[in-house]
Length: 184
Image 1 (cartoon, rainbow, N blue to C red):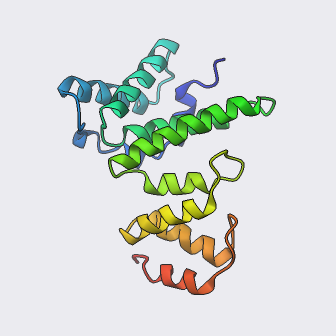
Image 2 (cartoon, rainbow, N blue to C red):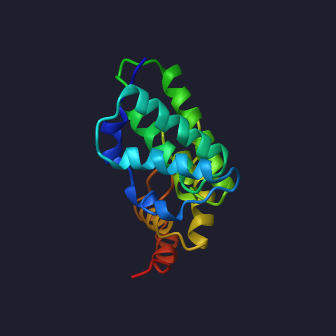
């Protein structure tokens, strides 16, 4: 089933994640892998509607980049998969939704292996309705990211503890602790 043309999903991407295209590096593979990855990003950033062939090519090039541990490739592909899952019709089966969860989870684990995506992985575990919903695990990952200075993680922890959301009890003391770690 065809779910979504990438041109519709990509304006929602966090472009800050891929804006550093000149700094792209891959742990494995050679310069051809990096060039294909750059090509995929340039197609995404063009803002043009992609043909079905171009869309398949972009996803393939991103999957190859993920396999070769290219910086940010997994996070870009996660954004695409999240947008595709969000575009599923409400009548779609839980099985299909679980398949998207599985793909997203595996990509986040790959990103985490190369030191990226802790915020995204922690947040994913906090997503109610996901088969991977595990609030304590999500909080543990967010705390680790926050301790290393990740501001998005710190902001989310403040919000969680201040408001008692995402299955976590209100904890003003913990909220104050993380608020003190925010950069002004």
